[in-house]
Image (cartoon, rainbow, N blue to C red; front, side, top):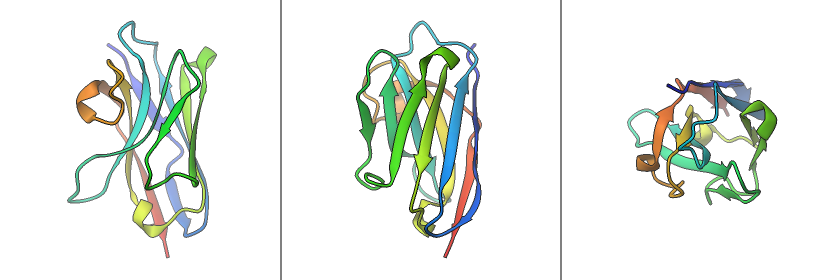
Length: 123
């Protein structure tokens, strides 16, 4: 069993920044990488960003490109999501997942999820 723990969420005003962290208890043997999704009330879980364990290419959703960046610390089994210029529409619960294949954009590629961290952006 792999545990993913997100942290760093909180409440900020529009234009502010937050940095989310996702720590994996271990690197699953079947994991290609970690991804970030978010889910607002009444909406489906939405892809935000992903990066593979073995490469440097990151995948960023168009809705946050230019504002969010993703990075990783391979030695610490940790990935980060730096969120700048936050908008009220970024308000959601943010989830970290471990992908068992490279279709990072789809929730079906993920077999482990964290418990989520709330991000609230006020106008």
